[in-house]
Length: 221
Ligand SMILES: O=C[C@H](O)COP(=O)(O)O
Image (cartoon, rainbow, N blue to C red; front, side):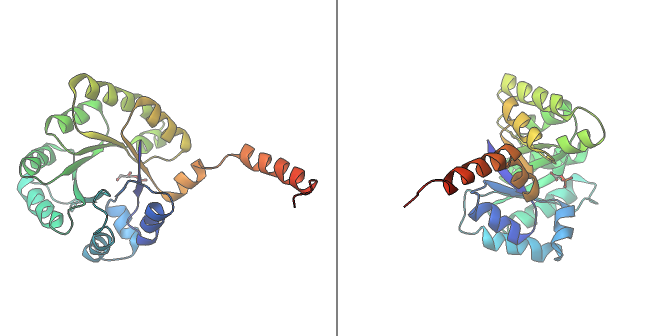
């Protein structure tokens, strides 16, 4: 399973890559806003950082106000020229699906985003999007079971041998990370704090205390 960082903050991206060896980055307009930088400056800085990291994909979302496939395609192509690492996030709407299909045919890799149902994920597979992003956290925030639809998408993709990779997005907990892995999703993406919390367990801290006590009662040199 690959771990992507969901952030547009360069310090967090560096930490994810350099300290933890994460596999890629996803961004969205909220993350760009949180970076405090103008959109083009933010993505140019990320492009510069990943220039010597060919296997470190970065998803960048188009202007969410664009409604027509032609407009989406134009912006996607323009952004994609900034870095070979960039994968362009396109909303899973009727026009977005048309845009993603044409972009993939023209060699621009896409990430169909804002996916909330298996039927949306099927069309992402059929147009050969590089990634599909079901938002498990948003569903579970609303009290829905977000994990069953991840399982359904994984099962459907296996049945039809779709090549599109599943990014379980908007992940909020270590449990969601583990469930996504259990179901066979390719990738999870979440913020650094969620990952760092998931690396820890109170029993580890408890056990460390036990071992420290033993160490202190032992002649160690
Ligand atoms: O764009 C996809 C993100 O994973 C959304 O997650 P978020 O609500 O935590 O920003």
